[in-house]
Image 1 (tube, rainbow, N blue to C red):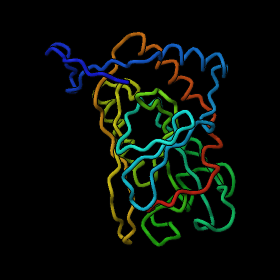
Image 2 (image 1 turned 45 degrees about the vertical axis):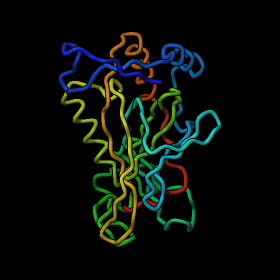
Image 3 (image 1 turned 90 degrees about the horizontal axis):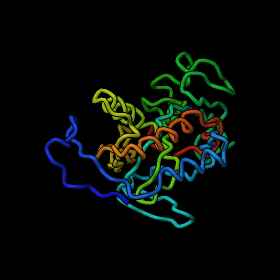
Length: 244
């Protein structure tokens, strides 16, 4: 769990955030992951947290085998990984595995493969739905610790919120903060696209900073593992029914 102490004026961060105390053994978790995985974390094996279909505004996620629901998630985000996946067939038809994937959003592997920037399926307006979206879906994949249990999960941010995630992470950097240094609150906001499809957008807000040197060190180790993670199979699943 987390607790928010009453700060003095000198404790207040330049961003207007206050230090929070993480109640849990982050160091033990980092050490166990390093020993058990050899420092090579396969994030594709982590429990998934995805946005609900139909514009739902409640998160559903798994904690140690128990399904939980909540209107918001408090997270320690370890990385914001760019990824892409292209399914030639519409949702519910054909092969559920993507024909082409990219683990960095730069180069695709599969059919057609190659540079994402010049791929016709990655251009705006290429969506087979006739919308201004892209046929090749651009996701953000966030390995994160879910509070208060510190359960590591994989938050998959849909194409409609990918740029929102990028802007949030960039704003933190401009304020001199790493994304793993803050508590991130993720909420769902109902929206409707030009085609009348209702969907959920993800909104991100920093609610506090992590300053305990022990926790900062442990999080640094977890971030290193997350950034070097094996992400090639993350997208090999049924496409999300989003509004792109």
